[in-house]
Figure 1 (spheres, helix red, strand yellow):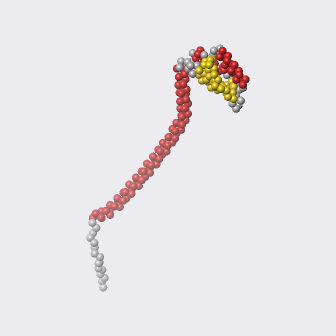
Figure 2 (cartoon, rainbow, N blue to C red):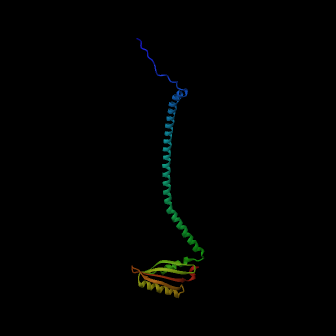
Figure 3 (cartoon, rainbow, N blue to C red):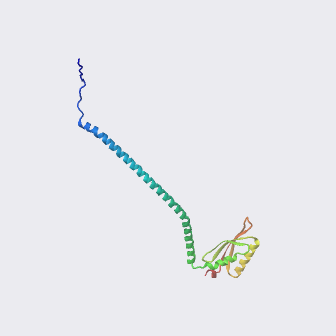
Length: 185
C-alpha cells in the first residue's frame, strides 16, 4: 500500500509583485531611517552641548561686565557730584561777586568757644550764620565782637534769629546781617 497524500488546501493567488518588493525594501528603509535618526540625535546632542558651553561663557562674561559696571557706579557718582559742584562754583564765579575775600572774615568770627556750623551769603551781601557757643561767656564775647563790627560798618542790619540751649549745654544761635560790599569786590 502506497500512501498518497491529498492536499485539500487550495493554493491562493500569488502575492502581488508590489508586496514582494515592499517586503524587500521596507527593512532596508527602516534600517536607513534608524541610522539617520541616530545620526541626527548625535548631531543634536553635540550641538546642544556646544551651545550650552557658549551660553555658560556668555553668562560668565555678563557677570564680569555687571561687576565692572557696579564698580564704576561709585566712580560715576563721584564724577556727577564733582560736575554738580563745579557747576555751582561756575555760577558763583559768574555772578561777578568775589566771595573769597569774605571767607577769612567769617573765619575770624570763630573765637574761643565759638564754632560756626553753617554760613551762607547771597549776591547782595546778606549773610546767614548758624553757630554754637560753648558757654554764655563765649556767646557774650561773640555779641561784643559783632557790636564792634557794626560800629566799624563791617556788618549792618544784624538780626538774631534766636538762641537755643542744646542738651550738651551749648548755645545755638542763628543770625543774619549785611556785609560791607568791599568784601564782595
